[in-house]
Amino acid sequence: MSSPDAGSTRLQDAIRFALDKHAHQFRKGTDRPYILHPLEVMLLLSAMNADTDLLMAGVLHDTVEDTDATLPELEARFGPGVAGLVGAHTDDKSLPWQERKAKAVAELARADRRVQMLVLADKVSNLRSMARDHARVGEALWDRFHAPKEQQSWYYSVSQDALQPMVDDPDAREVYWEMTALYKDLFVSYGLDTTGEVLYQYAAHGEAYRLRREHPYWEACPVPECLLAPVSRAAAETLEDLWRL
Image (cartoon, rainbow, N blue to C red; front, top):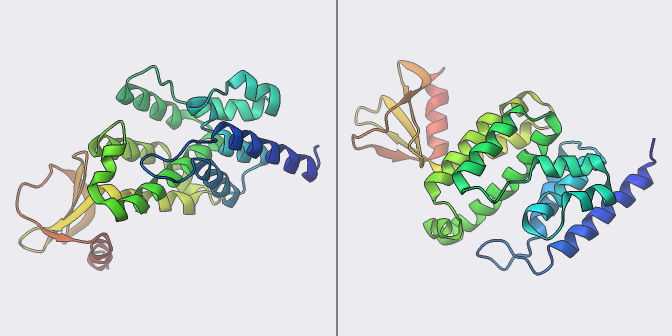
């Protein structure tokens, strides 16, 4: 069994490697150094009680996808465990955006707990960044990405579905619920119909649900065509709680 000092040394080596590989890179549309993202992913994993290999994979997770690093290089330097985790969360960028994201989500649904924790931490870090920037620049945010808001909404929605096992994981549950809250703030709108008896939530990619006062359980429905009175997420959640009393 390796000592805690050995684990710390390996993690520090991974951080230095990531710092070098991501040097001179910035987050899309900002002047924020890119390295802040993998470091945040590592910290989110630490909050989920991740082991050293998983922490290392967190800080290295974009090196193969976005720099000249390779999986054989990671395996030689950091071991097969770390390289395997990074490889499980590396997109095939030779595929069109929609195809590679659908492939990634299908694989995520079958992935083991540690891979799902890695992806969850990455998604929350990305959504935090989107939420901060959306508060500053509004809908112009979506011009920064390869896919429009509607496709981003779909991708983060199906990712939540694939990561559903994290709800029952005591280490990951809190981070999962942060992901759902951030998703709703970015992509979901709420409205009441003219009677005030039906609450709707509808995502940017066209998925819609309704909650009827006399039957307070969300059910799928077409996107409403009637004029709705917009409500905030906080107000919608308060109304949902009241109707379920």
